[in-house]
Length: 118
Image (cartoon, rainbow, N blue to C red; front, side, top):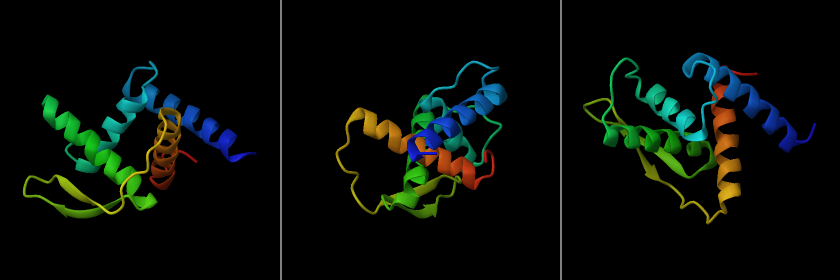
């Protein structure tokens, strides 16, 4: 099986599982999955977030997702429990489709690591 086909199959499985668990079966989109990862990484699951906090959650998720690729490095957790990362290497300029593939690959790897999917 080619890497592209494997990524596509794993992505579809992940979207289905997350959609069933968090979106009552409606397909959850890429941003929604990134948001869920941010909440997971913050660890404050049972609370409401303000609009700016939701953006920060997505930033945390993106940093965490791209950390294994060498773009970010975990720095510290602040007094409110929010993780902080520093840029290790600037992201290359990518076309929209390339960005999407990179994020989907990073998300699939994240959930494989967490053993949410196989």
